[in-house]
Length: 459
Image (tube, rainbow, N blue to C red; front, side):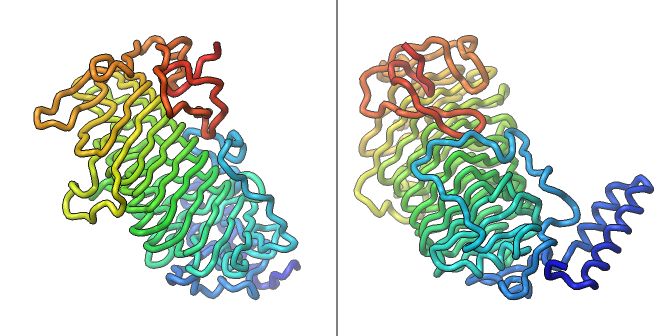
């Protein structure tokens, strides 16, 4: 019986029969609710402690195969609102995680020994890997502080959802002081809490080809964590009515890297909030389709900051929109001063389209006391380029500020991703991009840097 008792099989069959009868009576919602309340015990992932799971099914000795997908959904429900599941463009991030060998690594799913993701995480050795079969899992999991780990989809896009670990902190809670790589998963449905919590004083969390949605916040990277990287991923549909529902909140992370990713459907928070020491935001697509009340990219300037090659669109026709703002951290409230001795920013080769009236919209808002600032080769449509840091608060149009950026007519864009058929020639720059965004979420080589804006034009 593949490790399952006859009693468990009968119980599962009874639950399925009851749900089938409810469905036959035409009450699909009641059937779904019944399955939610009576799903197998291995799917009822309990809250985990800060050093790992404390639930009964979290040890490798009593996790069995055959019941890892919950009764309320199947692998077919993991497509997002804006991108396809399981076959996103491969991406060009610096490293790709190796395939998982389920003969030597713990793997989760109906065809594998583990039904609990937490159990597989606990069983994997430091520096090891966990594979997850495509499917829908009503679970959450915690990475303990002593363990570096790779967690990767075996096929499709496994969907981990609707359970919160460690005192309702997140679907994924990371305490590891080493390096954790998450590749190919969908994580969602955390209510008004965070989907992912990269905790205080942790190491590196690297997200590749992940889809994160439907919560109060997508990811919170807390104080003094070493590194957060997001590659070729999608974040959307965050809403926290009592505070800002940010898609990504990197709070005083030492290094933040975000590349080739798609951000959209933010209602009341920043798409990217970076209180980090060093920031690298390159070749992403940001779509302000709900008209969030916050600036799209918020940077507390500290260390070395790069915002290069991003395509940014705002559909907020009736309000003023700032694509990004930057303020030196030591001047922002009572937070800690910048721990390094420089505060520099480069904003180059971005394209920003603000639809509707210009109002007081700008590519960059509020620049204070940066040691150095480079703003060049940006295309700006329906907005000003920058509001300077003086008390007068002067807004500059692209061609008037330093002659290195240009206004661009909205009807010259070829598509919603802001590809162009022709564009002004770029000025000489030390920041020429070698990549550009590739829809729906990835990057591709950029042939040249002859033109301003986020995309190259072959010559």
